[in-house]
Image (cartoon, rainbow, N blue to C red; front, side):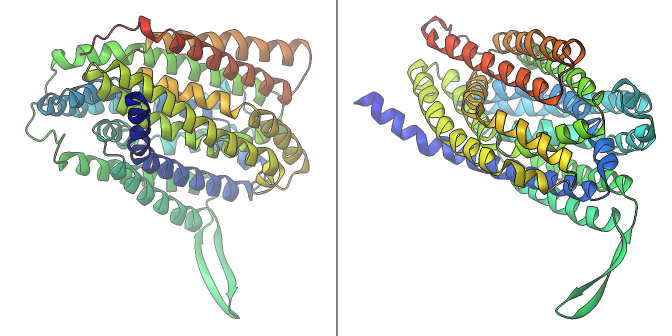
Length: 458
């Protein structure tokens, strides 16, 4: 009875942390939908130009996020152990890390912006515009790094509402600027009155500028909010390296960084092989990825809650609570992902039509979306269980699972299907689904042996 009461008592805690993150990601996805639809109205080539470097964006963003995982595990465990001062010191180190990493990635991304479209096998006709788009959106790299890392610090202490509010602000700015910068001046009728809508007519470049301004705004606001936060403000901390904090954070972050770098490189190779299939496949893949991202929102929203609460329980050395958290998270996740998968399966063609008028793109995208919809619950479980492992600082096993799945199944399988069997986009997504199912099996096996865990926190 005591364990049942504990389990039910965890539901409100999970939801209170998860819903702001879900709403934040929902709004981000809505803006991504709007971006894709606006650019898509310019034609298939414009969509392909923007989407051709999407996986490189994932590579950079996920590598930075991996560093945040180390801070999340450290801070959430310190808060579970009621050591607020330790959390504040870690926040100070987060400032130092942000400056170093932000400047490093600024130099790398801007320096390689000219050759990335070539490496991604983008068609010659859109290489220049794709390169310009990439350069512009990575100019505010320091602000983007601050948004990712400082947002993770706030979530680690249970503050998921502040990043959500900042995300809303950023998304509104992005949409408004897209509307003004992508299209030319035009006249619309509203209740019989003609209204002139200003516009710069910059197309793809306008979309890039809008994103860059929004990213910069988000980074500045996030920095101010962390600096003024009542629990983890770093204002009184020395902004010099403290290896008593950095060392355990790096121990957690390094395997996660390798995992995200390895899987993101896999996404780059995966997208490069799809780009070689032509504009229609590239556009269908880009739009389908955009559509699919909305239906993963329950998974990644729950992952944040799972990581924070598990880190707190791990800091208290409460293994029973961790076991009950696993049950609660999986139950909620399965329900939400079955629902989202069902909606994706039913409305796949309609979702594709929001972003493209090309019948080839719509048909191809609808097929792959319905395929992946069937695997949603399995992938959702692996997302949430991985979040729990991150909260405990156990990142080696997820690294091994993800690398094995990405390179052993998705990449090798796609290469064989496309270049030896002359199959197309559908076969590539089939390999992706097999990768997701492998992750599900490996995480379930790991958690079935939970009694083997060693409770060693920072």
